[in-house]
Structure formats: structure tokens, C-alpha cells
Length: 341
Image (tube, rainbow, N blue to C red; front, side, top):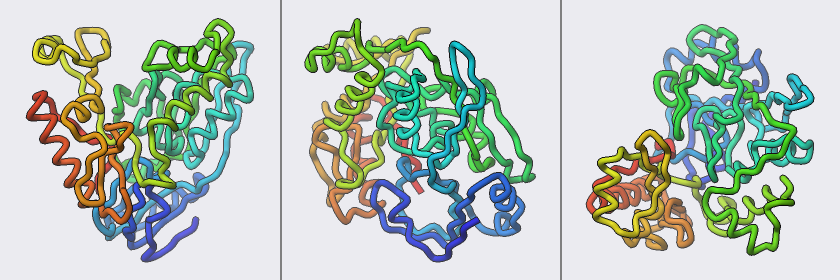
């Protein structure tokens, strides 16, 4: 295991915030993860589990131990049949690299998740999603080490209580497991999901016939859509979608619809509706606006950005201002998708 002391986390968070941690531990295998769990320092110092840092906002130096998997591409076929394949991916593997690899291999089901930042370990914690697809749709299990005991466990997806951007790893299991690998089940039959957002419109614009669409084409369209509206963290620091889209009941939905004739929404079934947070933020006039060096992206209001030299507290101040505006206009509370430290 690699260990470092008093080290900057600038390269380990996509917001580009330069804060330090007292110690950084980089685990490379199950033996390292077990060593982490059994180290007495975990009983006396605070610790933070971090993946690629694409869902992290640092507001201060962290006075404890940051634990993170080694960054490497590590994908193995666990089992395969004529119809599908289960692949096991190292926690520190970049998720989008797995999507690209799967498409090349003729394994399908990840295409709509193209270009989501972060690593495979985080996909299991966050239940990442985009364009009508979520990690839970393909996730089989999570291999981990329990920090309290050092026990090596495999947790089935059905035991993780996955829902929209939620899992037990974010609640009662928060900071309880060092994730080693995540396995996904992918189909050998390409069945595209085109009915979310502007996918069909983009296909038409590109002159691509949905009837003859390939997985390579769908992945490229998703990548192009995301690149057109989302800033590159290498150019402008950000953590992707900053807020979760509120999910409301029937009564709240009817109120909103009566008050806002142009209301945007997605039906989720069982009397639940998802209201796009980005649309509400835009309606409140925040798109492209800034508070100091922190701002709301001018093409996608769901994304808060570091315009250069912003501190974590600058982004938090902007977050609170945006939340207050949405609360006042729509009566809804926006909750951050980003982990604020």
C-alpha cells in the first residue's frame, strides 16, 4: 500500500480545490484493504473514502486519512453465456473506460452512461445515472472489506437498497466499507434506450436512423451531447451535476403544474414525478451567473463551476443562494449530489 503525509488533494478532486489531508492511503488489492481496516489509526483519526473525486467538494484541509483505490484499468470476465456476460471491475477503474471497453467487446447496457465522470467504486455508492439508465440496472454485486472487522465480503445489488442517486453506502453503510470491485451484467443483444432527453433529436440531427443504430453510434451521440453542455473539469473545475433532481408526490406535482404552466417533469410511476433541478435553477435566473469565483455553468444550470481560484466555501455560498431561490419560487428543497467536506 502506498502512503503519503501532508499531501495536496488538488489532483484528486475535479472541482480543482487545493486542500490537503494529513495522510493519504492508496490501496491496491484485498490485502491492502484489510491492512487499512486493521490499522489502529482508524480508531483515533477521522478518515474519508474517496474515489476519483468527481463527486467531492473540499472546503478545508482534512485532518485525517484519505483512503482511495489505486487508479488502474482492471476488468475481468467473471462469467459468460450466449446471452450475457458479467464483468468484475477494480474500484479505481475509470467508469467511462469500462463503457468504452464494453462497447468494443459487444457487451451492451452501459451506453447511456457514457462520459459520466468517476470510478467504478463510486458507481456502486452513488447509483450513477443519465439518460434513463442507472448503475443499478446492470450492477450485480460489490466486493469490499468491512472496516470495523477486516472481513472480506461480497454484497449483492439487491441488498444495497438502490434508488435515485441513493444506496445504503450513502446512509447506514457510509464509510463502513472499502470497495474493491464492482461487477456488472451486460447483454450481448443491443437494445437501445432512446426515449430520454434529446437523444432522438440528436440522432436525427446527425442523420442516424434509429432502426440501424449501433452501440458505437449511440455512445458517441451521448458523449457529444454531454460535451456540448457540460464543462471539462480539466478546463473549468466542477463535479458534474451538483444537485439531485427533486422527486415529488402527486399532490405536489399538481400544485407545481397549476403554478407553472411550462413545468418540466418526468413521470416515474406510482404517483411520483422528477422535477429537473437544472430547469428550476435556470428559471430562477442563475444560469451563467456567479458569486465571486464560483458560478453556475452557462450551458447547464445543474452544474456549479470553479471559474478559477474559487475556494470550497465560495461554492458552498453559491449552493446556498441557489437553494434559497428555488425554495422561494417553487417550494422545493434542492439537495446536493456532491459530498461536501
